[in-house]
Image (cartoon, rainbow, N blue to C red):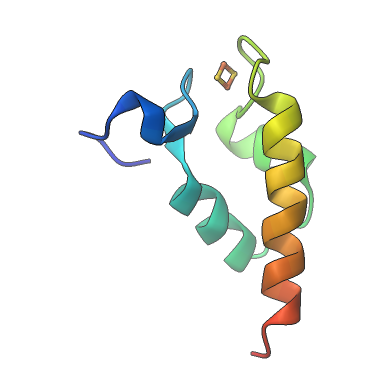
Length: 69
Ligand code: FES
């Protein structure tokens, strides 16, 4: 969560979460979107971002798994 960002930088405006938040969480071992939701509440307020962020989570997870450690 980074303060001072423009609202269109957020992937979840309700909780002011940005892409790097999600990427960092995946790198830290978040294995499912539900797990991320438990921690950050992403997509649980107005739900308008939920579908998109679920897909985004999958995309980033695939990318992280592709990259050799
Ligand atoms: S924008 Fe993510 S819950 Fe509202």
